[in-house]
Image (cartoon, rainbow, N blue to C red; front, side):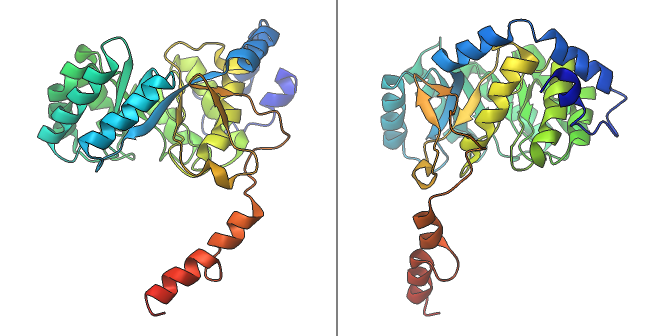
Length: 303
């Protein structure tokens, strides 16, 4: 689509105080320059990814070391660790990962909404020695001003705030951007309904100069969001600075068109569509309540 047609697909109601249709069109028009070169770059190099698969809460230290070693061998340079359950445990695990990946590689942290605002600031001050790029979802995803307070408090420590995977519409993202409550914006291709709604958020992030680093830590989310973030680079942001897309290595085998990762980067899908189609055999096997998996589970429970 040309910039005018593309911007006509976006609903600007409730966000025109920060982004008008004319401004969106100007952003898209400006980025026509270099578009073919960026497309060629994606086809050959791909979009940079980070891995969440090494450091889930509950993994033993041995398991964490094993997965981290495998990821390093696979060329991964960006790692995310889950935190927030126990301070001393976090210090040990973050220290272990930082020692393994070295000082030059990127480390992010994710609290999954564990803390109140003062607790988040105190906890991250303790973990600052491990040089995280960001803390993700430090508090309730609905607390815009709380995220803003945490952002201000952590700025002197060089730690950004990332959030967005629970944001369900463009208005919430508008307010997060207005309040300077985040330094990394994390769209979720399922939570934020429709491609059209995502387009409005990508364009607002561009105007505010905030990098988009999509959430993809769930079944099929990598398959979906790759389309949005590659489009963002080619047509909206035109930058890879401080930008990366989450990757988890779970359950891709159930999809007809799984993501293709090469050298820790998403390679653009070449099949038509949104990569959401699941294999028929997987659907039948896991369908409730008649699929094989559910039948066995229910039989084991005597139901």
